[in-house]
Image 1 (tube, one colour):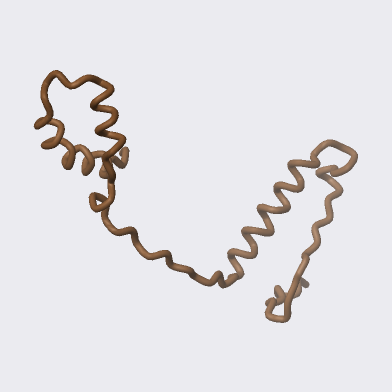
Image 2 (image 1 turned 90 degrees about the vertical axis):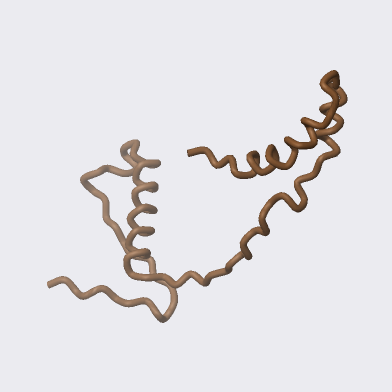
Amino acid sequence: QIQINTIMRLLAALKPELEARPKGATETEMLSFLRATTLVGLLPVPHPILIRRFDSQTHTHAWVTTWTWGIIYLRAITPPMLDGNNIRLFRITAGDDYEKPPESK
């Protein structure tokens, strides 16, 4: 759906004024009238901007890591730089609050 709420409010506000104008108004007169028109007071007050702190989670970290390595692989897919059979992945960690994955046996 197309969001046309702003246009509909403008048309509802301008319709009585445009209908009250003489029928013989030229295009130049109508354009000057529309240029002098403002939307101040017609639009609703915008919602306040909310700032939220990003908290990293295990799933988010895994997604970003997978996405990053996918981009690296796809951009450098031309052999011999990266050969699909000889890729070794490694993990880059930062900070003290990183949870280590369980050791594989």
